[in-house]
Image (cartoon, rainbow, N blue to C red; front, side, top):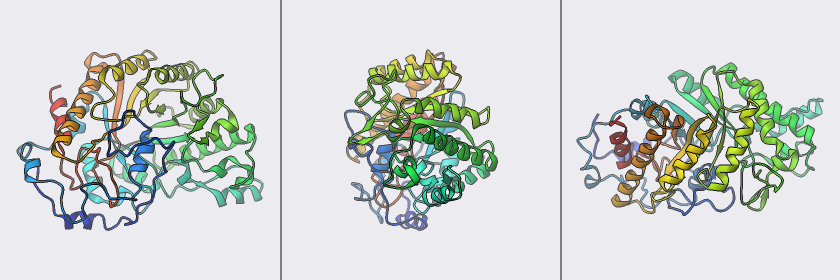
Length: 440
């Protein structure tokens, strides 16, 4: 196919008709520092946080319109004669290429947009559910309380938020990264409290370990029994390292706080919660499913070292297969050397490395900014190619995931970090990646 200059705004509205018009906050800001993905910042923030806060639906994105298309003749003229080909095929000799399946409810998730899913299948061979696989969507408070009344201390789980996407993956031959088993954010407070109540006291360590093990066992067993072969790796623990708020006795700077909020996993279990999560995951996942530790700001020196120390220990215990480096980066940060240094350090462990949530934002939605965005995407893919063992580099990079497909995928979504625009037309960033990977 070739680039089409314009796509009817009415068609976009029709495609979105199955989605909720009222967008909800997809998890809230983790620590109050997360910038909207539509604006450059001086430091990477949690990609999970940025993706959720950027899609909170409070305001429409600059330049977004329900009835008019953003793509103009001027913007497409430089690319109108270029072929659109599956990027996954250009990357296949080096790494899987992943896409985020966005959404915070069954109604507003991109699974309901046929064009989104068809283009995802065409361009990518891996996907990640950006929100709906987190524990707040799966844990069932009233069911857990009923379990207690019947003498069962284990939590109750409901898989309605994940089953439709897992079924789509199964039907379409799409692999999925499981995201995420244990995270301090988007974990309901009642899960850590006596009686599974909102205002109970924290349970003791043994009780919390029982709940953690049960949650991991129930979730991974359900996925493996009902959708065998779909999930090929899990982010077992997300964002447990925090140089700005950590236990001084922890060998890996274990997070104790997120802004004003405590880390409930740390408060109930201690720093052991990370190793125990991997222990339980290793116990229940199929032997060919890989286990990852996932974090942001991985290129910052203190955090790089702390993550290295944690993952080195987990490797010695036979509990980890890879490190996930989130990538909510800007058009001018971090610099290539910082990324290379972190990847080189992690590669010393002999673990797989994945870029799990790559999103490069712009300050304003102008042709000039989108060209800069394209340049940066091209630079990043060149860097990752050159660092990969298949190209003679030091790192076994096995997947690069873009944390979404199209800008402004629904009303209220302010995201402009994607490589396709809201009309499902390729942006300059798409062609920059294509041009880079066609060289190899």
